[in-house]
Image: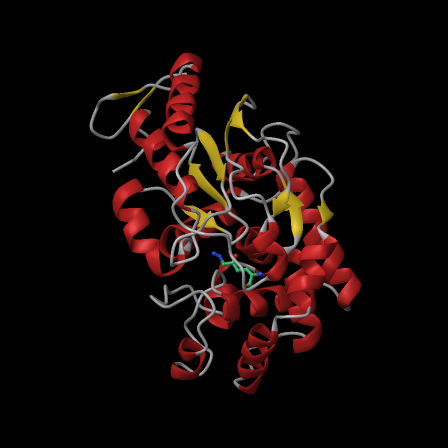
Length: 319
Ligand code: DON
């Protein structure tokens, strides 16, 4: 498959080039030890730091992979874009803009200052305060209905039945007082849409969903494919929902480093403190990489580098 990029050059996207780009990035960063595992969730500190995997899923359903592709890890903040997409699909784009906000904060992902400063308004569904509000907005009359919807949409994006990593869920549930405080503060400004403690619990469970790197790439490829999973062919969300989800990823996906990422890569992406990152090349690919060691902002060091190299090598930056 070949396509023209905006500057008129040809995007090299044949099988051989994709494999070469994956191999090159993998070899180059395999032994890089920069950064460290998240440890504010005790269970995440125990994940083997040397694990490294990269997967590309094309919008015609082909899968290219390299590294520890069977390794399971918790999805963490990448779940925020899946929940956001479900909410846009069910409530419409305007409701998210009004009830949560879609502006980048420029602050750390778990900032409480951003909530206080703007009285819970004009934040976004990809930082913790906005994400907990987003979880609270998920359709359903009670905890179970909301949880089932969240699990289902994650399964649909991944194209298989996923499961919760129970030790990670319990570990975070026992140590998430800061997120509980964020939900309380949001609630004080009437920006929560379901019982705050239960919403935090559903959010914590959602972050503990176990995935492998191929699951993440298939999620990204579903976004790249206008909301239809390219492997299972299931229509998960509409193209209009995707068109509103990807810009939030582009502006807020890597927290306070979102600008640096977009400056260098030009693609919507989302990271999680479990070490995963997804990037979306609309119409072409979902790219995912996994490596547990994170930088200061909470983004995987090797995953950022590997995706950046692949995007440059295959000429996928649309700008
Ligand atoms: O709420 C938290 O802190 C985690 N469950 C998720 C944070 C996260 O993944 C931020 N990522 N870079």
